[in-house]
Amino acid sequence: MCMTAALIVGAGRGRRFGGDIPKQYCSIDGEVVLRRTLLKFLNHPDVDEVACVINPEDLDLYVSATEGLSLSPWVAGGRRRRDSVRLGLEGLANGGQSFDKVLVHDAVRPFVSPATISKVLKALEDHDGAIPALDVTDTVKRIGPDNRILETVPRTNLRRAQTPQGFRFETILDIHGRFLETEELTDDSALLEAAGKDCVVVEGQETNIKITTKADMKLATTAPENIILETRTGFGFDVHRLTPGDGIVLCGVPIPHNLKLKGHSDADVAMHALADAILGAIGEGDIGTHFPPSEPRWKGAASRIFVERARDLVSRRQGRIVHVDVTIICEEPKVQPHRNVMRKSLGECLNLSPDRVSIKATTSEGLGFTGRKEGIAAQAVASVSLPFKPIG
Ligand code: MG
Image (cartoon, rainbow, N blue to C red):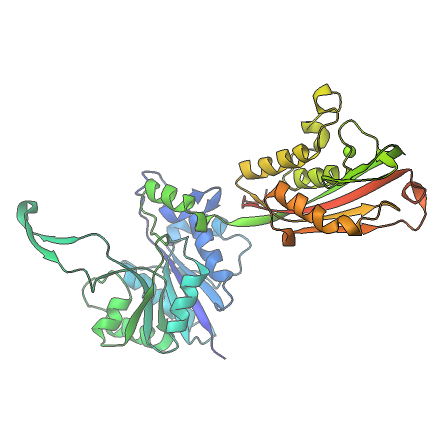
């Protein structure tokens, strides 16, 4: 069976942020950089083991950053980055498992995407090494003393190397052992070059930056593809009494009838349940919190304003409503003939395509207040995607 390891190199003690804590142990939105990086590999379906090379002086920080994660034992780094990688590879080799492939990755590149990891692994099927790299878009100058420009370097064949750099495990382990004294190399693929091995580049990822400064951190966290989302669910329930009247509004759709729903607003029981479901998903109270029934200005109001307010509160949190499911419980009117118009109505209200809006109806078999046609009940579930916040 082919096994793949990821070796995260975090032994550096660079404190370029000016603080006391090495960069890989600083936090972004409450989550430590190293932990974010490790999770990218732990959650990738094609990575079997993840190990980290650290400076033992940072052991307390490491233990706290990796709490609850399933990692191979940590390895103490060496004097140079390449020593740390070699020691990490040896640690993996001596860990009782054999690996076919290994990904070597900088601890301070927490924004690597699953797609980038997959591209490197795929290229390793046919090559000894593969690295993600980006085009050079700026013009490159070679300079001499006094900043005098000596030449413009053609950039067509130049690439900027990133990590994870992927290798055949035995190949990279062997080369690290053989080229111990080669002068300092800034990445592992340079060792493959030195050994005359076959190493290719795959398309890199612009946002897979190496965090060096606070400005880097800011830049990377605001890139939309780097915002990690989580799904939240909210439930809503509402009942309104039926009284003699001239029609009912359900999901914003007027339905002719000899009864009407009693309420302060237009009493659209389905919209009310839906607004509460959305508010529930984002923990923003309920419809009464935002639209107190004591306020005369909501008298006779079209209930879509309640749902639109809940929708806007989701947007304000940089979230999105991804799906809603409404169930209307009544003996009459029949919902089925109006279902598609209702889906369209809710979809317009929520800026959702109708395939993300479900409307169901049921009777209560003549039982209870809905069975006696004294009122209509509605239930709703809303699924909302929000930027991830650490739990706690
Ligand atoms: Mg209500």
